[in-house]
Length: 240
Image (cartoon, rainbow, N blue to C red; front, side, top):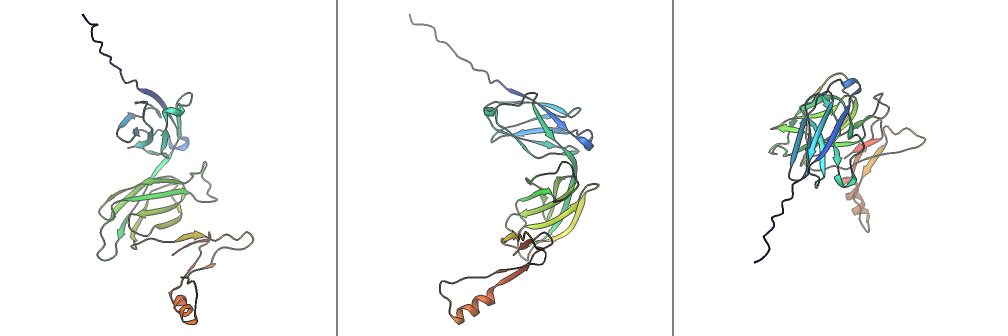
């Protein structure tokens, strides 16, 4: 008579992650904290600016806020790296909305995806400042809106298939912003910065010109006719 079969049952052990939100002037955040991985999602309500996430330990998770009066940059949890003693501490700002409506080129379809890259403008008095963050926005037809932190921000809006739109030093400390109708151009762009350690960068002329391996007078004339020029703004930024 053989040995009786043994059925092994392994229970999934969840990872309990306390989360505390530093709010400064934001007050009570409310809403929920949400953790998302490749194929799963978990959430927990925020009460008194604290929450506890119960997560399967085998996944990497991205943590963000939902339906909250606060904004926070997404945070990644890697269980293999361990959780800090006392849990996660996430810095928050009061949440603002930036909205607008795209004006599309004739015959162009509406963008499938809109996202914003944001950071505190140099010299802004916000404390602490927001370092560069890329996050998705919400869009419905040509209308869109992005959740951003309160502060004076530099914003780069990207609508898939179109040239990025830049908004500099937008003051969002006290209220939301409606940018109204925003014109989009199809295609891509070339952008950069002019840096002059001892000279003013505003108004510098940047030229974008095709090149050829060997130029004759006729080729040079044709290439010069195709050249584009742009002037830098007060920060030394240019865009073609």
